[in-house]
Length: 438
Image (cartoon, rainbow, N blue to C red; front, side):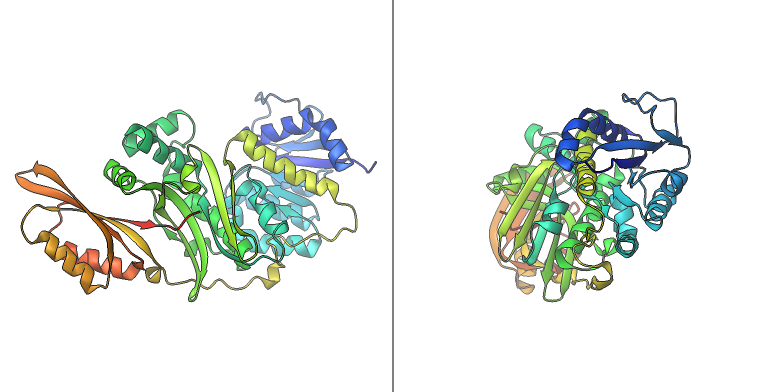
């Protein structure tokens, strides 16, 4: 049997402790599967005294994770610190420079520095594995990087943030407000005390940027993603979507267009009968559309200690199965030096169907004015629904809901801006894209 694979773990929070426990509890099974033992020989964390539910007395302790990466007697460095700068970046860079394999769950680090780190890994002939960075326990990275050889990806999209999916699921199922669902998500530990990163779409954007690079062979461009969160979604939107046969999901979407690559994160209406509309709670799902395979949907737990630890251990096992002299595949599916510069598509030229909700004065001529603005911008309407809202502040109001046929982002925005300038609105307009989904 080959020599044991020596592992060092930096970061012993929920995920790091779970990884150590899995490696201990599943040690015999992993040894049979990998043909060698996997042993945690070094660790680093801020607090040595904390009870993490796993015996780490046999591992060498480092207060400084960079020192662990550089000097520990290890083959694989596991980064579970988090953050796109500071210790996380420095210790991953140090481990790669030292010729050690790296496994990370750090999506923010990869979204910002992934290509540069990939170049170092490929130059040194070591692996940089990151399955846990996108969609938790779902093996989407392995699928795209290894199992889809010969396929050309045309679109990748999915539910990539469990917090947002949980909130939208509860809003629909129980008729609760966004604020009430967010508070419950925080109480249950699904959302942070400061939930901005999740609910405004940044977490989804980091994951989407990584998938985009894998899908289209481009450099990671997390700063070039069109971004909208879910904080402006109301019960009126949820009810209107259901009435029209749709469900609202926060999707990350990347697709190749004639003008470049389009990356966007925003609330989206998907048909209730579609598979992705059935993904509820904290579950994640990723759909990949290709020329050969067609559409593949991967769904499963997207976060949590066990789901993330499962992905990390899978990455470690892949390294344990490799042998000296084995030629490792490129980090992002193509050699990092051959990744193409990212060419951003014009978001305002995006074509598709749209849901438009307008709260307007209930008076003669308003609907005619709205219809004229739509016609002036060549927008064809699939359906129109009107609801009387009663009187508020002495003014009679109604809600007008429009569903368009395929049109452009620019046309919709121009039409809605026109309606706003006409002075007919009593509240901010709501525009939600309708996504073709399997």
